[in-house]
Amino acid sequence: MISAEYCRTMARYNRWQNGNLVGEADALGASARRAERGAFFGSIEKTLNHLLWADTMWMSRIDGWDKPRGGVTESLEFTESWEAYKSARTIADQGIRDWAWRVEDQDLLGDLTWYSGILKTNVAKPFWLCVTHFFNHQTHHRGQVHAMLTAAQGRPGDTDLFIMPETA
Image (cartoon, rainbow, N blue to C red; front, side, top):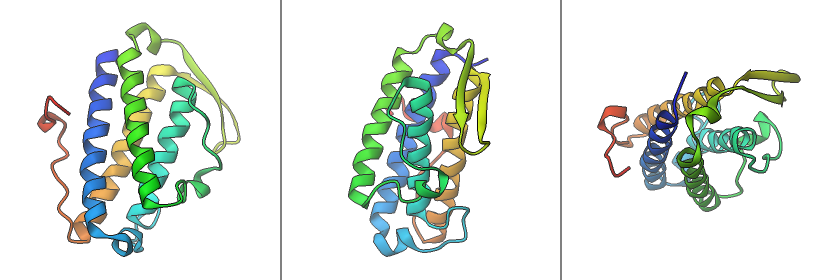
């Protein structure tokens, strides 16, 4: 079982790491961000778009955000431009933070039920497990982006949770 404090810590980590990766991806330029890199979603930009789409999808279930359009395939082009992506990422990270500061331990109890487009069926899982998955999914794809940035001669910063500044 996770706690509200876990959610707050991971929301801070999410924003800190997105700032780290987006800043480094921004410095690479458009062609390097869009280059095929052999990752599951191909490029840095497509992977970041998928992650933003998935964050929005999970927050639609967790906190009532508007459900994003399309499915996983469409997630790769969730935003129409890099500037739109950066703006949407900033807004989403603030929304995730706002939710985490409102959530209480008891809110993490019970089940979350939703229709899974991937599984093509209704799913019910413990709410705390879904929130854990949400944060784990972010870390998974940010790790892919970190590797792609490094391969592109970028220098993304530290990712270790215990190094996260208190001000993040």
